[in-house]
View 1 (cartoon, rainbow, N blue to C red):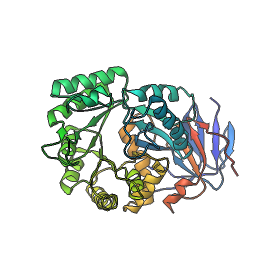
View 2 (view 1 turned 90 degrees about the vertical axis):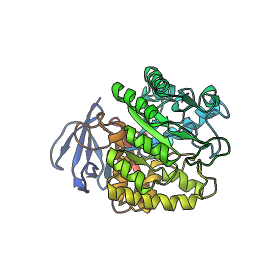
View 3 (view 1 turned 135 degrees about the vertical axis):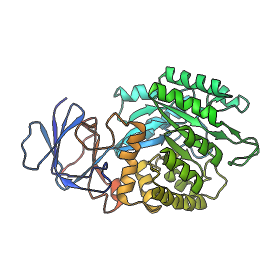
View 4 (view 1 turned 135 degrees about the horizontal axis):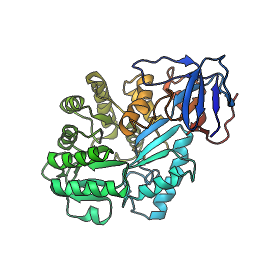
Length: 395
């Protein structure tokens, strides 16, 4: 792979506690960032003039449901047809990449369909983010209907939970996803007798298998009890369909659990659709989530970006904008979409930063995202694995 020199850009990396933009050149080689160079330092290779632009790491999406983007709030995977699910994914993937998302973890797939999608995409068959596939989620036994439909691996007891985790790891997932709880018939989306929930020992069994295999273990939870079990069991990241209490945030802080709030999908719901998996009014949910995000930052709970998108508009860029509305600084929101998300999904693979040795996933912006997070949408070019995506018009 040829060398590429990105010259003249202001580099905005996100691994430091506070922003430190620098006017440097970036030298890329073999899909990796080779070096930061002084503006007048010579280097061999193709030159890309990025004068006046801002370079940030490629964004990550920890909760991407490609088969559901555009489906609306009430459609389940495989409810319509395989062809329709795949069509939605083929439409969403280029949109995510062109908007600066270069890595995503797929969730919500039926019968591990996302493993085939991952293999096809990562082989370079189409412009798309690098995919990590989580396959079908593991959840509590609730009568067997979900398992029969391929939407959930229903388990009862730690031994079945461990067996399901091993089954998924053998199938080739990059991450294990736990559905900590499900509502029972006629129940609310909160903890009570009608819900089907994994207990702490079942979740621990899944996490242990993930740790042994070296794969990521993440979870979704509807209620406080299931979420608390996930944090105590050592789940790396937790997506919640409710605003966490101070008690839950304290537990997450003590266990090092990252929170994936997925505000963009909820904000879309607040504009006209029902909020999936919640009986709260969407606007009330967003307000409560904003307060909780400020509490999370105060307690040291990492907040990372996951879109949970049901519409093409609910991208990681929009998630960053909503995180700023919730009280994060633009730099903190950018960290949530890069360094903090990479710490969960790809801690050793090198995404989420512009430092030498990391993957050459770079977004060139027309304006400073630290001045206004809305500038994340002003994408001039995307570089994925060291290669320009499309034919950008550079100055």
